[in-house]
View 1 (tube, rainbow, N blue to C red):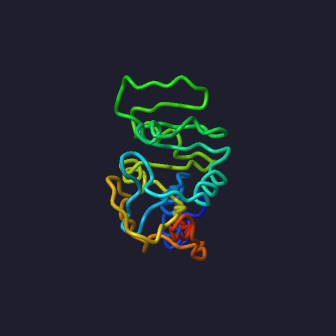
View 2: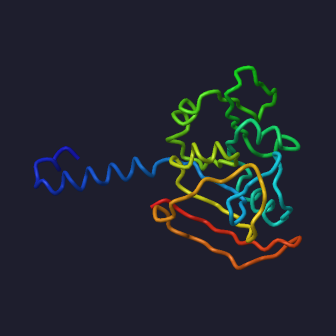
View 3: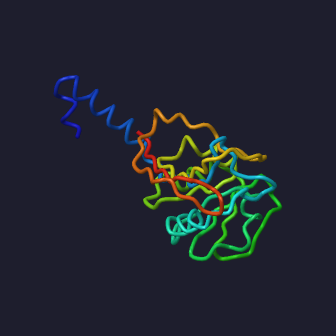
Amino acid sequence: MINIFFFKNKYIIILIIFYVNLERNFYMFSIIVAKSINNIIGVNNKMPWNIPSDLKRFKELTMGKKILMGRKTFESLPFVLPGRTHLVLTKRKDFSYNHKDVIIYNDLNKLIEEYKHSKEEIFVIGGGKIYSELLKYTSKLYITEVLKEYEGDTYFPKVDYSKWIKTYESSIYEENGNKFKFFNYKKI
């Protein structure tokens, strides 16, 4: 690699561009979310719809992986999800949870530093603030879009899709009166 610097300047530029792109896309954080067409993801710490296929997809994608969430999302779970390590981010220094599959973090920067070069995919599962803070560190999006507007108090952030490439789009499905589609995106 050092010998490359003795060649023409264009090699240095190519090497720098390659390094910058490597660093930009190196994070293994992936967002998984179910959202309405108006970006609602929750109301009173609950999802405003019941779509079993979405829950099945969530389970299939996250099983055996680390899932990252905010404290409120963690507290909204009915139980610690089996087969997954829960990374819980909270500003509350007094928050604790005694379970082998739960790790509490009080500092987002420390969490990012610890996992930014992870070789395994880490799923960000909510809530709204966590999605907003982690979106820039995310390399993949797994979106279930409910094709209806909902009222709610928690939103998924707006995504600049010009920085993403769509790798999958499902047909339209319907369950419990909700039409929806699955999408996968990868950061360019």
